[in-house]
Length: 343
Image 1 (cartoon, rainbow, N blue to C red):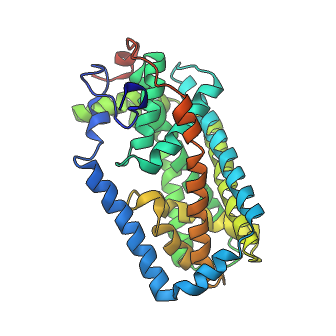
Image 2: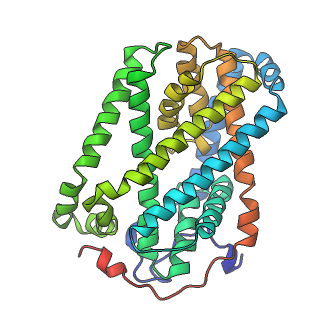
């Protein structure tokens, strides 16, 4: 595999001495084994669901999906990824890493495609870090921007889930679901507000944590600067809910959009756990519980989860164009990384 395609490897300290140790330490010791375990667990969960609830009616439900609705959901999903690229561009600019939007868009789609096939938890994010870091010769800031991009996405996910739980619970879902969702959102808000204090305490932390914390310290010192990115993230989460509302409409399910804005962020909290491949199995199980509580038939909920998994896979495959046409930039001398680290 030549250098232009070697995006599945995080930068090593031999390639770039300024790259923090956390970048390589985050990779699992046996990535292919981890990948196989995640994929196998997801398939096993789906197999149990299909066996328990009888696969035949579920497949009949899937056959009802109208292709135009499926295509619309995929198109809207891709539009959300384009929005995600803009969010990443905003976060990178906060670290003085400036680039054209088309650059961030291409790297985002490379990440989508890489995540489908590269084993390990950080395949796509490592690819983004390598592409952006080498392009600008600032690997530390590139890694920090990707970490911040993921962090902002999680914060917005927790906030939207909590807001929806408080104001859109028309189903209604039980307090056993609503209360933890609101609590997690409140904790995320408290952490966001306390981030300047955390930044001031970085120098008291162990050395390995200081090195990682130093990279994201600019974000922690000025959380207000993250508000535009968080707003975009909330729009993106609503976009994902609308995608799944469209898929449900294609199946002929008459469920209100407010239900998806309530349930999808909660489901995505669970699906974001790095336990299975792309949340396979976890998402379907969460759909079964949450949408089932709202009155959706169990077979319909499982079918909807499988449809959404298929839509994200199809969307990810479109990243092959960017993967093939976007060469990895040559290694440039790093600059400014040391100033971002706390020694």
